[in-house]
Amino acid sequence: MRSFTQIGFAALLAASGLGLGTPANAAQVKLDAELGQSAIVGKKTRTIYLRIGLEGVALDEGVRRTPVNVAVVIDKSGSMEADGKMEKAREGAAMALGRLSAEDIASVVAYNHEVDVLLPATKLTHQSEIQRAIDNLYAGGNTALYAGTEQGLREVLKFADREHVNRVILISDGLANVGPSDPDEVAVLGRKAAEKGISITTIGLGLGYNEDLMSKLAFSSDGNHAFVANAGDLVDIFNKEFGDVLSVVAQELIIEIECRAGFKPIRVLGRDAQISNGRITARLNQLYGRQQKYLVVELEVPSDVRSGDLDVADVKVRYSSAVGAKDEEVSSRVAVKVTDHDDEAEASLNKKVMTDVTTQIATEKNEEAVKLRDEGKTDDAVKLLKENSVYLREQAGRLDAPNLGVLGAENEAQAGSVASGEWNATRKSMKARQYKDKVQQSY
Image (cartoon, rainbow, N blue to C red; front, side):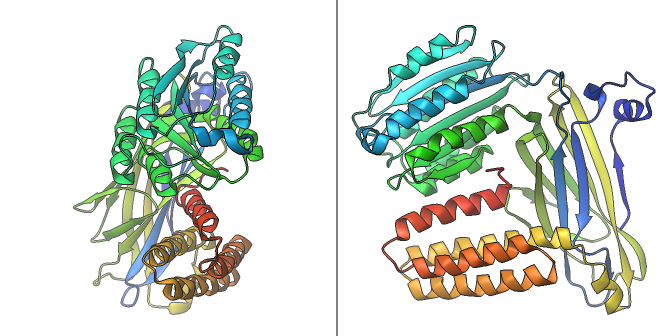
């Protein structure tokens, strides 16, 4: 497979030593566009997979990171008082916000049936302001999750721009029982946030929250989602979340794929995307240093291809760099070899790409198993999970991918829990794992 990547004039100068020569001049995103196989049998192959990998280039020591504009929105309903949840929420929020500097902006919002702004959005010139705000967190009342999230967004919007990492971090341990509570309705709020360059991370604490609502809210805004079964793990989750927030190297990423030579996009696995007349457009709010995110496209192969090299697609990614919030672009052209020999096509298998493809396909099946269980079709859910386990383990051997074997073992264990009294915890764990695999979350 041929691949050509343009990293931009400034980056070329920096790489050659002819420019300023500082790390800040290099492109912040590496683009890796590859097919699941670099050769196909023209008259036999009907579909192929294209993987678009984006890796954030970490800033070197001494290079100024993008300032943060973050709102921490904490559920203070009555159930948060149990099992030390409020105590750990205070501890985790204080620790995480304590990592910010005087250039960063933070706010703290608490909600039960009402919403209180404990710390309006402000630059953190005095860390003591954070502690005073968090010390005012006390539990009691119901759960106005929508209103609390909306107020968090208002605080972030006061200073939201492309020169900040704009994030809302929502913590809840219960069902939204005041105001909008339907997952699709709440997801609209997430999409509105994404349009403003704001991601919403959702942290579900304990076994009482609505995992469908929390994961949809995160997915619609390109945030993170976590299931924290024990309050004692909340501090660690806060730490990992702020590790992501403080390592953003690119924002407002727009991925455009133009299919060539009759290759027809069928679907995008794992992520939302628009497909129109052979063009695919997808968006990511943020990309972190030393982390790779990807999307997988299933393509239909033209039926009349001839032997030789054939262009498949042109890929372009535009984004705002964390260094100076300047616009950058990377691009690549992907081609495939058409052969008459089955063994040549089989030998061209890209195991790395197909491992990611397998993960996405298996995640779809895992999601379908949850739907079957929700519909009362427990036996069908168990059967699908066991079939998924077999599929993953077979692919683990074929692709030399031990992580697929681990995922297969998880599906087998889930099959044993579907009909048990542990379904609530199992379902939350499954939703969190599905989310992580779909968007390549770091934790």
